[in-house]
Length: 387
Image (cartoon, rainbow, N blue to C red; front, side, top):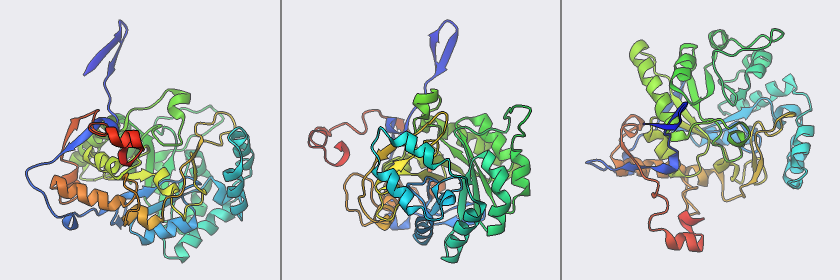
């Protein structure tokens, strides 16, 4: 539906995850029968949840543990882990500094050069412990470090930026990364993102993406929407981009998964993303709350340390339980932030969806009062959904 902003501009109404609800169908099933498996490239996982490539979320230990638990973690090739041989004292400094000194400290710490030998070391450390080695970089970083990533034996490569497209214009002195050539030349699957529109999703799939990440600015620690004014609420963005996936599949027979990336806190958020059409999700702050997370109870975005225009901040998320509790339970909290897999399976059972494909087909309604209706006491007492 188009809305006229003024004589010279019309706008389309877009919806966020908090504005929708899922409607039960004609059947239910026992949650134990819900099949949550999915594939990205040639890798199958039981849990359609990826830990985002943020320095407060994923290090070698977290990547290995996530692999063991049936999920996936992505390590940031341009972060603390590849700039410092011993990242622990650096992470201590980030956690201890005051908010007024935070941005300048981050700019100082991330000015340390990235060391290719540390990229190779981190990947090999994950592989040696039986983990899936998934890595992420910006398009510029991908050009620089693809050879060392391949040599080290990484399993997946994520190319991520605030916005990625196949039609990037650069100054004459800069040669932009050819995404299609990069995908063709890499011996491992390459996921591309981020985007929020049908057409860009289609172009990224034509370029050879093994998966496409959807989301601009919804992350808990991201400030891109405030700094740049750019973004599309996630429910609409996912629906638009999955339409491109389905059209591409009908044309080519190739099914490219869509990953909803950013702004997801609870199991319900994850369920709604999949109902909007996503095949999996990428989350940061829920995992930053794990005992094992490297952030010491803090979480910050990938663009936070930018030397010219930071587009993220550091937030205090606390430490609420082990990674296993957060991912697989048993839950120690009542607000939907623990046992994310259990929430997904229970929601699928309630909706009668036997697998992810059926979950993508459930009925969705616009419901801005979903999270507030009847929750007066929870809100007043800051319990459950009122926290």
